[in-house]
Image (cartoon, rainbow, N blue to C red; front, side, top):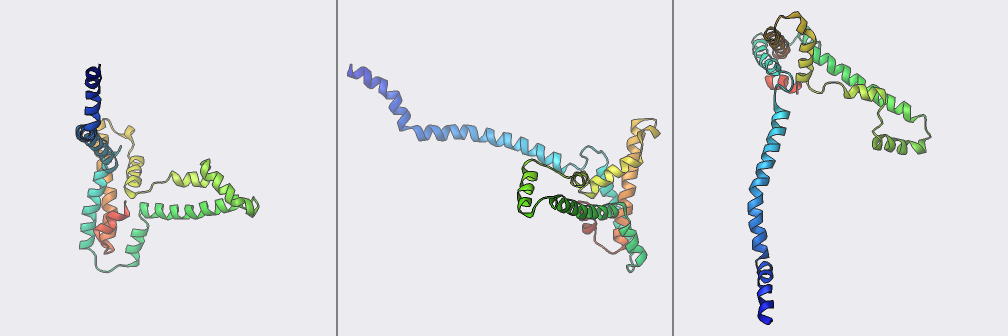
Length: 207
């Protein structure tokens, strides 16, 4: 009887004795697989976020145009003039950013006017309710729809200027998109170079 019980206890005592080793071995088995899955997910996220194309197949042409335009503009740089500064300031993206800044000021004023309807003692709780319930005023919603980067702005800008119905085939349409993308990028970069600003500055301003 005693021998039977001792035989039954052997597997249990073995598990207790080598528990840490078994956990370590299972960890060695699982860790490579977890790392592989993490790498696949991370790679997918990275490619999705860093892909120049996103859903536009011509973003890289915008950036290529900026580089070449900036190089040519820099060759013609002598001294920044009022006309040059005006050309830089009047570029579509600069004007859009200026409009966005103005809208941000209006958003702050809209929120202030909304809160002024309530007693001062209740305004903090009203703000808390807005955050918890994700309540957004009309101008805030409009602000959130605006482009945050120049590359995305110009991609949409190009798509608005080049209409599919104007071309007989998809190939012609894609070529026209690429040409227009390069052209708007070139104009943007040229003005920066003409103003004596660095290429890195031009590139950063689009991001």
